[in-house]
Structures are given as structure tokens and as C-alpha cells.
Image (cartoon, rainbow, N blue to C red; front, side, top):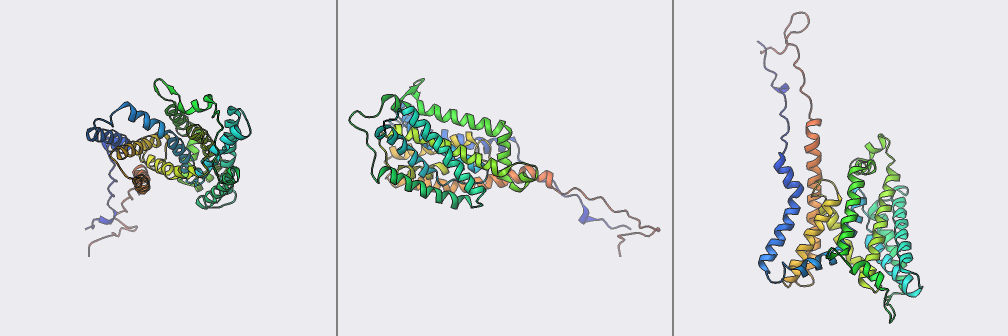
Length: 364
């Protein structure tokens, strides 16, 4: 009598989460934003749910949001650009130096600085990809060099406008309103929409995601990984240049060290954003949602009388949480999407009779 081949029984298929779980994963961070706003509104009914609070959030968080989108682009390819804060500081002091000290028309000064930001980003990409240096080390080194250039440009001091101040048309770049809302909010939405189109709808974006998930596989299918990664760093540097223009219009004073304060919020937003909308991978819309969560949380803490040290504590804890959640989402994406495909096929049952009429697997 033939014994059952229990070790050859079909393996159970991995359990896949239903649509409800997918909705929670994609939009949970957005729901959290609404819940935080509701909680702070109930706690601080006279100060938090006001037009002033909304305007303050939109004005104050526009530059961190733009910088978070800049940080997100290299993360898509699996790289990190730690020179963002240093580049932001150099960009904003260069705009003010060209306008105040050198007498340039502000549109030309802004254009030159934005192009310069793209050049710095391209250099970062070349150093990382063609120099074969880890992105952490490479961008930390170039960032330190940018900080040195910032100190040389400013002489270690601040750049202060003269008695006439800056041109009103320049400061309006940041201070103006559109449809009764702060104009910088529309910059963020426009930039996020453009990045969403590039990353989600164009072949370039799909190639960048492939490079980030598996560089070796990208090379095998013919994707020029080095060139595309340089593109990502270049785009990041260009966006940093734009953020520097906004920061100059906001601050109106060139401070050589101010850019460093934006580095941690940028990466917190970029990494936390990879857990929203498209869980498991960095994406533009998720980054905007993540910045909104951070903005609402910081505004509520500030109105509740939080001390100065609560802001770095909040950002540091959020960054740790973001890294953990991003890693978890990425692992779930790989196992959820590929589990069925990678599961071993059921092996066929061997014949119960051996050639020549003998039997196999008979019970002793």
C-alpha cells in the first residue's frame, strides 16, 4: 500500500491583505492629520481652529515641504543627500548677496542661484555614482564644502539689506496670497504635482524606482543607472535652489547657518512620506501628507506652550519612527506583492509504480 507523500503536499498560499487594510496603509497618515487637527481644536478651541493658525502653518511649512520633496528624489534611487541643508544656506545667502551687494536684478539673481543648485546636485551625483562613494559620506563631504563657501561669501556674518530694503516684488514671491491663501502653499502643490507626474506616469520615474529597489536588476534590463541617479541628484539640487530663493524672500537677511535647521525636518518628511499614499516607496503626495502631519503637530505643541527643545525632540522621534515604518512598509510591499509570484509551485506527485512493475514508497 502506498504511503502518503505528506512532505509533497501543496504549500498554502500566503495570506494577502484585503482592500480595507490597503486603504488604511495608504491613507492612515492623512486620517492622522485630520485627527490631530481635531484633537488640538478641541483642546485649544479659541486659538487652534482659526484662520490665523492655518495661514501660519501654510507660510511656515512651505520651505520645509519643498526641501522634503528635494530630499525625496534621491531617496527614490536608494541614495541620500545630506548636503541639502548646506546647499539651502548657500543658496539663500547668494541670492541676497547678488541683490544687495552686487546690485543684480532679483529675477536674474534667483535664476543663477537655481541653476547653481542644479550644478551642485549634478556634482553630488557624479561623486556618488562615478566616484563610487557612499551617498552618506559623499554628500556630507560636499555639504561641508558648501558650508565653507557660505562662510567665505558672508565673511562669517550676516548679509543685511540697506535702508531701502529689498525690492517689494522680490519679497512678494513669499509674502503674497493667491485665492486668499498663502502663495508658498501653491508652490508646494505645484512641485508635488510635477514630481508625481514624473515619478508615477513617465518612464523615467519608473526607472528611478527600479534603480532604488534593485540596481543590479536595473542594469541587467538596460537602464543607465549611473546617469539616471545623477539626474535625480540634479533635480534635488535644483529644488534646493528654489527653496533657497524662498528662504531669502522670507528671511530678508542672509544667515550662513540657517540652512542646517531644515535638514532634519526634510528627511523626516521624506521618509515618513514613504508610508503614505504609496506605502513602501517614496512618493511626492505622501511626502506632502507627512509634512502636514508634522506641521499640525508642531503648531499644536507650540500653542500648548511647549518649550524650545520640544521641536528637535519631535523631529528626532518622528525621524526614527519614519525610518522604522518606511522599512516595514517596504518589506510588506516586497512580501505582499511578490509572495504569490515567488511561492514555489506544487511539485508533481511521483509515480506510484517504479519501472519494471515495482512499487515506490510502500509502507514497511
